[in-house]
Image (cartoon, rainbow, N blue to C red; front, side, top):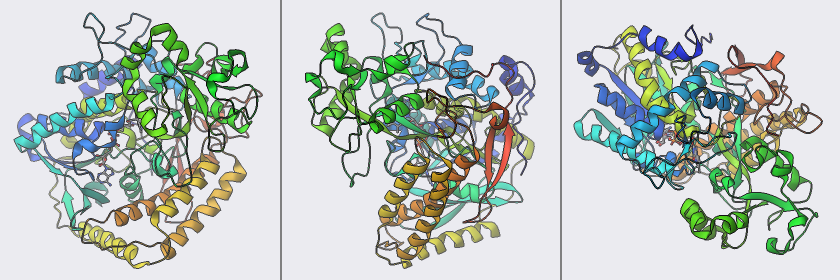
Length: 638
Ligand SMILES: Cc1cc2nc3c(=O)[nH]c(=O)nc-3n(C[C@H](O)[C@H](O)[C@H](O)COP(=O)(O)OP(=O)(O)OC[C@H]3O[C@@H](n4cnc5c(N)ncnc54)[C@H](O)[C@@H]3O)c2cc1C
């Protein structure tokens, strides 16, 4: 396998313009001769598909939900970054680029991250033109708020429902093209294999989730926009359906998987309440603008929070990181919460795994109406889930699995190691390094979909020409058979445990050994436990119902089978990286103050793993990271 990042030469700020000029174009009247498959209808997939169709390509779009607008992007709360500098507070494209690359602990490509900052401003213009109801100032200009890891206010938002509003915009554009006939939409359809013919991605095999029918779809290029794999932890802030299946099956067909051990544990989630919970809820990072995080100074203090006097509280983020305070980046805030709870200062009913997020100061300063206006829906959601009123008592929060920085490896054109297979949005690894800053996932999804892939896919199609391969080709039949056989095999196990119980156990293993902090002994233990659990799954899972009806037990079992294999790659990756960087905290590599200790000399590379057979250690390929425009420094938020 050869990793060629295709980064254009020339000065950083000119690379994207130069590259666009060097690209080959597809003549407008030839575009209708090409067919593109897009899997996924979140912000990345919906924006890409709508733009392809608008350009004149024929597009087939797939998602497993009943409607494209139920993609998990709908859940995003806090906002989307852009370097508009409306606040006149010192922002610029370079500063957004720098914050993002530093936030990722210098483990992402300069060229990709810079381009993301460059196109961020186009996204806001596009979305405003679509009618997205971003929050506005009194005079009508767009409002901004701050997010973690930045000292400027550059986050555009629509109350706590930014993802929903942005997705409705992209979805409307998508449906316009469905109505015009340029997009054929396949909801409730799950991609279960990628078909590669003569070393090029030529299509997919899918299963209709209502009838169980397996079918093939051929195209000139395939785009995966299938989201992240944070649900490998079982408990996460992601929608229950989020999974790794599409990416993992593409990996099995030859696409390299990059940095799988970089997963983000978000600091502000509603804490776990018991052993039978299946989902966690995020409290948006935007709350850290006005909420102050603290724990009692006394271990095991069970007094109600409002009875604990000010001088008996430890505002530990403000104490440890005075310049960023409660807006320290996510990895640092999460680890700090774990640290105080592990040391016995945690609060709440469940194993003391909680810290307070307190709005009393902000309410005193700004008044309850202002707080309601900014975060009303989040406060309501918190109260509905916990039965506590956060206007009166502090919220309780704890870190939870939230986002995957790792994903399929892509070059500067967002193409994977399989020619013709493109990967966008959270499903790729490209822009966030070892830690993503808040409000930058929506930015990346829409940058990829609206402003990057429409150019790069054209370049690919213009150079490779259209395909004469259709879904009758033998490779499609081989894939269809494999998919049908896996369904039969799952249904025939007839054991005693539910697929969910295996998933829960896998989640415990990953959380314990490959979660917020990792060490060599733990990772090695996980690499013994996961294959054993996988073996038990294939001998003792009970999957009820049939394969020819809507059967969510069967759907989930297929996804759990992939998570079980994928969990091993995460551990191999974490084991290889003998340094701490961003969200990857190896306990053996920390400073005396307990901060992450990077090793730029030996680990300044992207890890790209190649499939080597089930149960076998994958093959590691390294893409060196070259920094010409930023100085690698120790990340400090003090
Ligand atoms: C609770 C929450 C709040 C967040 N808030 C913010 C925020 O404020 N700002 C921010 O920047 N980021 C936020 N994020 C992160 C952000 O929402 C996601 O990273 C982003 O929306 C992912 O978009 P996507 O298009 O890549 O994937 P998704 O929106 O996850 O879409 C994936 C699509 O792929 C489809 N799919 C997946 N597998 C298959 C398959 N095998 N076959 C067919 N279809 C398939 C699904 O049906 C779906 O349509 C938040 C995340 C969470 C969990």
